[in-house]
Image (cartoon, rainbow, N blue to C red; front, side, top):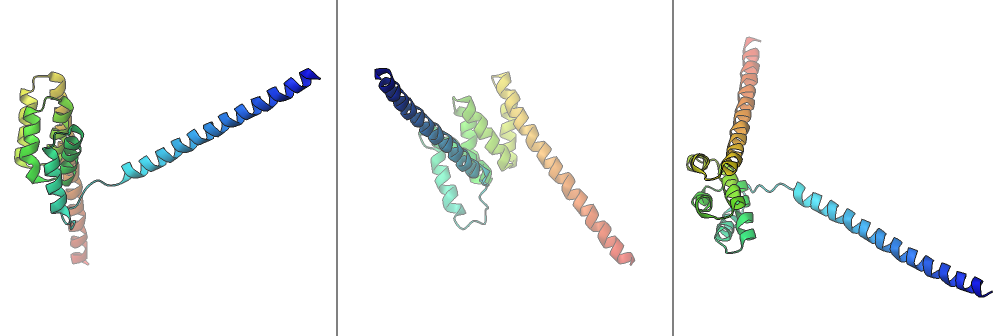
Length: 177
């Protein structure tokens, strides 16, 4: 009888332990699924702020202040967003980061933003940095970013030309009829 009682206590304890493990496993799985779904929604959103946005000037001004912060993460987030906004006002500050920042990742972020902004000065500074970079690896990274920008522009130009040709052909067809 004693063995039966010990066995019942063992089964009871074992069931409680398994139940606790199951609850924890389900909770962890639920948290992972929730985290993935939330992060997917956050990253899927378009980060571009239109110049016609009613708060564009305020956003740009705040990001320009953030670009000069002592907080590295804030500077990099600001640099990224200013590139997304294609803020020509940020070119000088981004060039300064590209020239003076110690961290190579920060320089890459500045170069990426300058390429997105796409003004003549911004692109010139990225090209100069590629030519005179101390590290070949860093130079190759910037060159890749720059060439990707040129490829995107040439693809866009090809699409624009194709649309123009199609439009002219349609106009020509309607004039003949």
